[in-house]
Amino acid sequence: MPRTDTDPTIPSDQEALMAREATRVLTGHPADGESLRLQVSAAGKEVTTLDLPHAAAGPLLAILKAMGEGRPVAVHAADAEVTTQQAADLLNVSRPFLVGMIDKGTLPARMVGNQRRLPLKDVLAYKRDTQAKRRAALDELAKSDQELGLR
Image 1 (cartoon, one colour):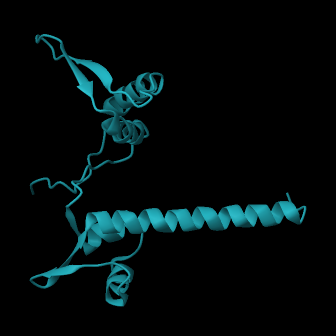
Image 2 (cartoon, rainbow, N blue to C red; image 1 turned 45 degrees about the vertical axis):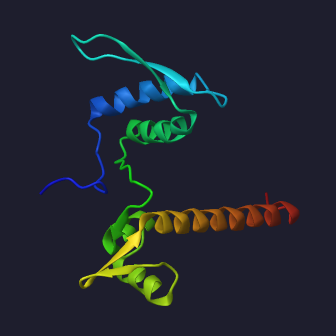
């Protein structure tokens, strides 16, 4: 079966090691709003120097960090669509639960034949929003614990 844009890449042990080293090097050279200058070479080829846009440094570092931890990674275009199963996997929920979210209007979807497709940007925005709400709730609980002298 051919690989799609939404299929994750699972790093080998050697690739994870290389990603950890790249993360260490890139973390030690913050761009501070400027582009990063990289030198790229392959065996038997000349060295090429290129400037990496500042906006690409954060996502690249996140990819390398995840790969360094041995986690699967995938890169998606902002206008990409995902299936209900892919969206459920991204949100760490069951597919039937996700379908219920679509039916309630929590997440937008369109029909392609008899299958639903969700805009990836909306799924990721929902994920960010729920993570932010969880963090806020945990912060509130921690604050209450401190006020009550429990911690």
